[in-house]
Image (cartoon, rainbow, N blue to C red; front, top):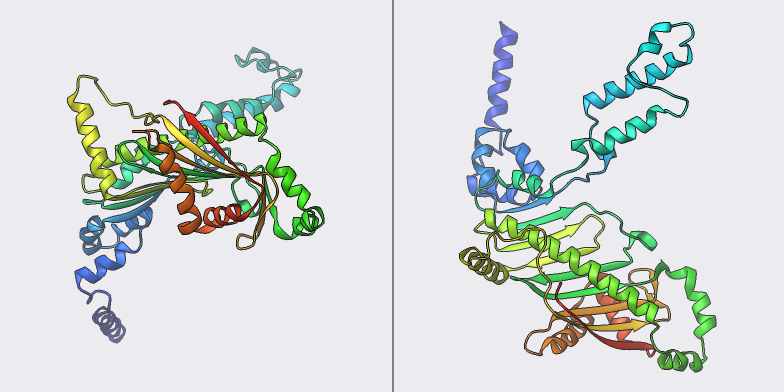
Length: 382
């Protein structure tokens, strides 16, 4: 009896000293709003009735889409059973002379039949080996009532990296109803700074003729072709992400700010409140016309004007601790009303003056180098 009274006293004392319960709802909501991660917030729904009523009021979230690679997806139970049976049949096939019923088995086994082939086929054909990105995001959004700001982080596939996991191609894009601007930074290779600084001093130390030759040498066709491919791939990726966030905007009428990035930090799409106003007007206009259903695969890229700044020699970036060879900075702007060239030139200038991180440092260093080349390109809508 004494122990039961003591335990009850301790429980009541513990409950009365719960300081978090004494916090008002606005403070708790402020704490939950700083969590951001949608998965963690969804788990908070199960903590208590109070949390279940406050979590849906969070208006700023971050959603990370898991990778759809087979190693990150649990194996279905039927594939495990099938692989076990195939391995068992292969072992039994080795002693089929002593076990005659095996010869009547409907599964045909030969010397070229290997169980890992069947396993790989079952993985590739399994419906769980792919993830519907929009469906995943939509399920996360359903937990919240009024989302004003969202950040999406997508898995990365086929990204080429240089030193310190720096992507060889990085880009940032802004969209409204269509492309507003896109800045792309690419390089043929990225290495550590101390690996090439000594060799660069020997090659370009006091010889001004090398810089003169680089200024006079034209950009090769192969270089231009590779940069055009960089531009097309970046714009395709940006337009696909714009289509994704457009679908999210239809489910979140209060959405005012969005950022769509990826795990490799290769590309980032940003949209502001004014961009969403323009986007919603465009969506409503499309639904009112007789064109039918709006295509959600990717947004159309308009006619664009490109200003490209290319440096063939090594570009040393002390803050990033790396050296870029064949560094290329490209600014893309819509070719509307003949002002696309001015907008693209302004984008290059803003990158050097206001740019942050690797992009800003590379733009400032390339602006000061003598061997840089300026190229002007135009691209039709696609």
